[in-house]
Image (cartoon, rainbow, N blue to C red; front, side, top):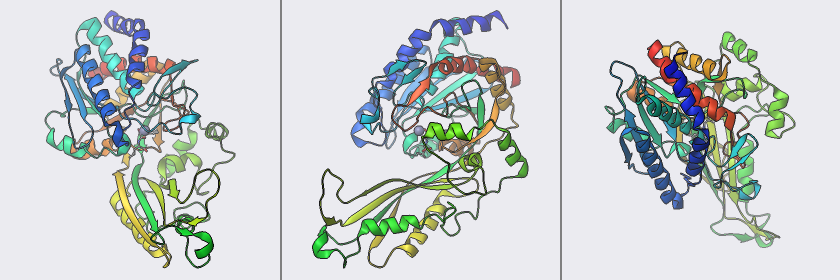
Length: 460
Ligand code: BES
Ligand code: ZN
């Protein structure tokens, strides 16, 4: 290893305490994108990052307003002739509820053992911070980076990145690059890095069922009025068949079949179903028996009810037939399903299964396209090399069940391929109480990012 590289790695290693404290500062800002009353905190997180990026030595740092939440941008273009990497991350987080299930305050980060606990610790503040700290190590020890770097941090990932298409369209020139790097996923196990080459897409809808035009006494009306909660439950029950497959006609029509070679490759991954059950707190897995759990997670589409609303849910008893009921439903999609078409199929099926005694309405909330990424590009080799150097282990390739809407936007609008180089773990409890980030991999992530930027030059 060159002594320059050694200096940079030492610089990063010696700064660990500061890296952790700064990340904690960022995690204290409750930048929850979906809650309208958290707008000021979203703005605060964006400003915090912009100030931090300026202090690191990034240039043209700016907070760009959008229709909803701002985009933070910064760059360092002092390596003419070298490739340009566009690093993407998101500073928005999911709501923290149910609050009572957190062992420590979600926005008062706490280190317990090897983990840092906070909302956003792994998704995605901790992971985007990895790259800021790698850049810092370079700039502090050598005043330069081996490649050109552009950073784009958004505040709407958790709500479908709805302002990004317009932002990208209006800043085509600014965002020109050779490759996109995203750390917003997890690796297979603490010592087993993995590169995600597939993400599921998403159609998210709200299904509203309307019964009587006001709540009714369940004694005076029960038996003669269809209860919208009951109607909704019947409808939800019709969304899957008895084997756990989605029952919407046409839902699977465009699903690209898994090839035998891909099935064989997935089967070789070190996947422990018992450990998966333990981590999820379930006694057995569920779903289409024609596919393994790992195939169902990464390469098959799903439909899930995320929440139900209706009627009386307070303490004690109240006797009513509620006027309305509502379900929040997400469908995870795989290539070549089209999110808008899936919304239409959902809506026509709902029309068909809505009892005549109630009215239903479907409202689409957001969409994300599924993605399958190229594995034969040089930057992929750079990522492998970086993981090998950072973790001491050859990475494996996996398909992920989650969604990152921007991946297809970058491909469609800028022609850019993405590398998904995550540093989280499967049991980080994303979107759930007690979200955490495994700190040894925060530091190994910084090392890997340092190696990645270097490897891009050698490969590029
Ligand atoms: N980091 C996740 C995506 C993810 C989760 C990747 C697990 C790999 C493994 C991201 O922040 C996320 O939660 N995305 C949303 C997107 C949706 C709102 C369109 C998701 O998947 O629910
Ligand atoms: Zn998330």
